[in-house]
Image (cartoon, rainbow, N blue to C red; front, side, top):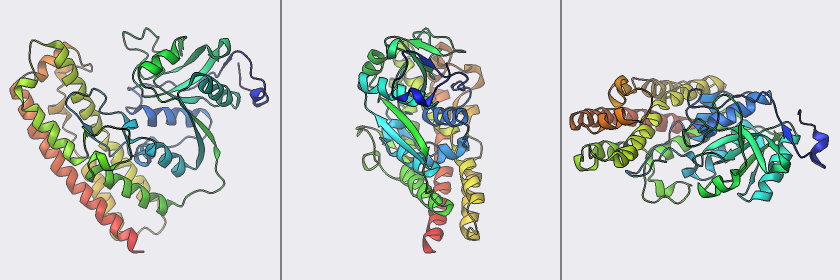
Length: 361
């Protein structure tokens, strides 16, 4: 049924929003930015995906831990990506805690206003998705998840999921409740202010050790440029890639895939910097040159021809796992990663120089 704001005070037992755009790694690779993009598209206030990636910091972040298949999770930065992107885009927003009654109330409130709710961990890992409907007074939820086509999830990939045990799944996977997006705020930040804030955040993500960044508790992870070094060094430890252990190789290929994804997302950093440079009136020419130079570096060859050979296909199954177990393959990857890391540091220096120019005015 179509949502009716009048239903907020006395919501029906069933409500489903039709036509919310599908989510998927084939559309956008980062779940929270992708979910927010789909949300804004549905409510008729679309935002640019590169801009969402830049404001959240997703285009500049990197975390690494040898045994963590969730290295890519943006929630490792706590609530800071949410705070920043909603401030930048000019929206009120509300966090709903991971408590069943509160989440049902939040879903009903959002849908009654014709807006999906952003969820975390309804299906699969505690990444973002969208709740697009509910039934049986909230006992059943419908929506989109990045993980609904996983074999053990048993949901269609081309239609809303339907789940009754949504809270138990979310609780087991340490999901983080909901975000209900509010209305546009009357006061919007100025483009120059946005650019300065975004550069400060990008540089912190690239330079700072993870323990100093607002985040969830992950002190055993390495962050930023240093994570490239850890990734490359780890690939050269042959004992960590036993050819006869699919369990170990399954973790290693997941970690490697996450690192590759974050490398590919540097193209979004390039797009963000170019669009922000164009959006700032009377941008200092020196700052503009540094932003364009950084964008060119971020947009250079991402090395996927070496880091994810085409022979592996698009999944992380046995072919990719055994490919990663090859010592010569991993050493070639490590060399490529060190080259990418050195290049990215050049980009970060350009960001720092651009920020210095902007802060002098």
